[in-house]
Length: 149
Image (cartoon, helix red, strand yellow):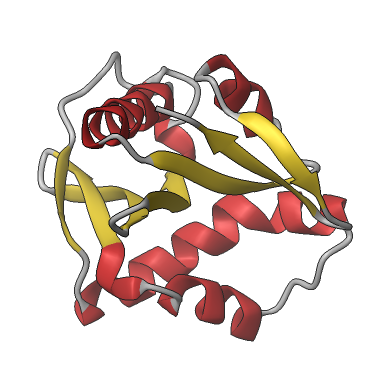
């Protein structure tokens, strides 16, 4: 399936009932990047990442069906994009770019820095750079990036 042309996505708070979908989504979308970065891949690791700041998680829906995850912590002085994941059929059509641009706009209006971490083998780094993020620190597995308002 090709990515729908800029579909309208509904964002809603994630619930415990969403965990099976979100775990499967994380495994499908992240396993390759994690392995290529040399980091640990396990169901337990995926579950730990999913549950980290779960209260910030939003499920992305298209026509009533879950198709992704957006997790952003919005603390008073800094926002962190913790996770953004789209089902494979929704990747490559600009949906992720549009979602992240919305978060960038919200953070800019709030006057806060926006940070994120991206695995070194994840091509999304180029998108983040296009949106004004700059590498602040490099670790064994990831780039820590920041965008100022």
